[in-house]
Every structure is written in C-alpha cells, then in structure tokens.
Length: 88
Image 1 (cartoon, rainbow, N blue to C red):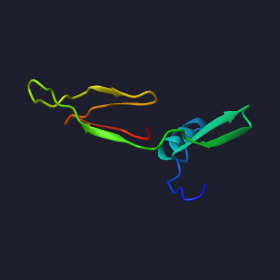
Image 2 (tube, rainbow, N blue to C red):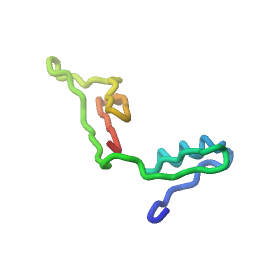
Image 3 (spheres, rainbow, N blue to C red):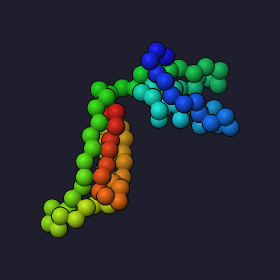
C-alpha cells in the first residue's frame, strides 16, 4: 500500500494476530476469505478523532475509568480522566 510505513508484527504472531496488529496500526481492514485470500480495504469513516478530559460537573474531580463509546469504537478514560476516540 502506498505511503503506509509501519513496523512489522512480531515474528511469532499468528496470522490472526498479525492482521489485528496491522488493522490497529493502519486505516485498513483485512478480511480472510475462505482461508486462501485476504481482502484489504480502507476503513470507513471520515478519519477524525475526538479527545478530552472527563470532569465531574459538581465536584470538578477527574472521572477515571469511564467508558466512552461511539457507534464503532470505545475507550476508557485514564488516570487523569483523559480519553481519545480515533478514526471516527
């Protein structure tokens, strides 16, 4: 694929692990067809991300461990209340 440069997956990775690694590192989807073929397509979405801090409106305390969810992905706020949803 043109203009995509990443480190290869670990040498001991299974095919499924390698595909998951590549999907997480790129904007591509990989689908195994019949065990002999793999299709590679660009992930849908307009490629924007959203991030921020979750703060309790009443106490101004950071909200740690909250689940933030969109239609196609989710994440959890970290120890500082920070979260990122990518490739929406």
